Length: 178
Image (cartoon, rainbow, N blue to C red; front, side, top):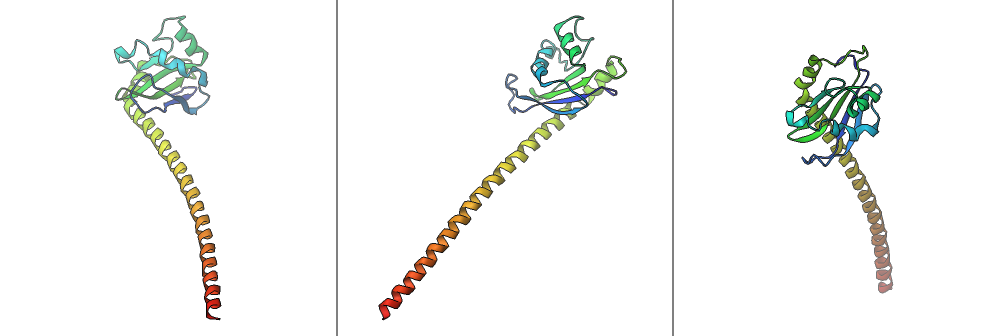
């Protein structure tokens, strides 16, 4: 996988195992990646290959010449794509641009990705969950800040009312003594 024009990570933000529930977003690009419009295309690429437990596909080698798949891969300079799954759940994709040398990806390149496939998927899943927790913490902190502000305002109002009560009792007590 060395020498790719780009490497792109695509993340599924949906946590359930239903393969039809996906919310794909482009996570990170190293170099210029494929545009967001092709995200829906990625799942179609693997149709028929998953039954064979094949999750790493190479352009120009795993698809028939002139096929729609090869045209799409070629238009977006995609040389190799790996579908990242954990426990039947789609975690995302890692897309490798064509090699800068122009040479096609070899079986060694595929093996390199396959050998680290689960590690990549776990790391990607952990990153998604970390970002989700981080976002939740920010939202929670915002709610705490709003509630604290309301409590401070209520406390200030109660102190004014308490002072007014003390002033009233002081005046009433003085009036009763005189």
